[in-house]
Amino acid sequence: MTGSPDSQQRLRDAGLRVTAPRIAVLEALDETDGHVTAEQVRQSVLARLGSVSVQTVYDILSALTRVGLVRCLETPGHPARFETRVGDNHHHFICRTCGKTIDIDCATGEAPCLTPQALPSGFLADEAEVTYWGICSICRDLVVRSSPAHQTT
Image 1 (cartoon, one colour):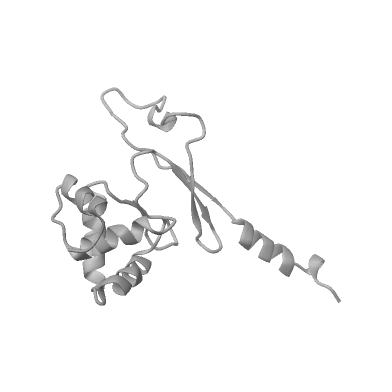
Image 2: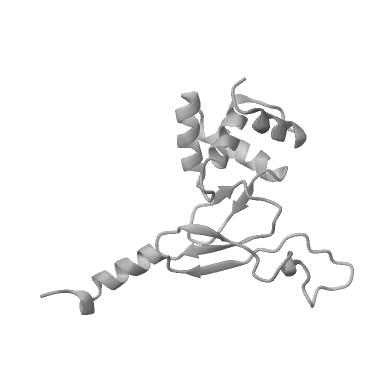
């Protein structure tokens, strides 16, 4: 079995069977800056294993998400993205133009978003999702450079 002992142990600790495709998916996610699509994961796994079906990648991503090893970000107008940064209640900024997604640490301390003021009695929040939308610096610079005011004649 290939893959790091850490990846194998994380799968075992989560109650999942250790398989080469699961290790390859988990390590592909670990080696990126996060926020990758299933197709990007599949391309990385193909480079490692030589072959893997689209369905297998989706099934593994689903299993990893279900057991808490992976977080799935589903945002309108963009493909689902996956990351292994879990359990810290961080937030995200998504560029409306290119879809670039970056992590934003919680702004005011330890999981403040998990203490909503108006939560009805008996309800328990265990996760909060905050998404900031805007334009990344690269797309902003492209817009500025292509504007008529910055065109030279």
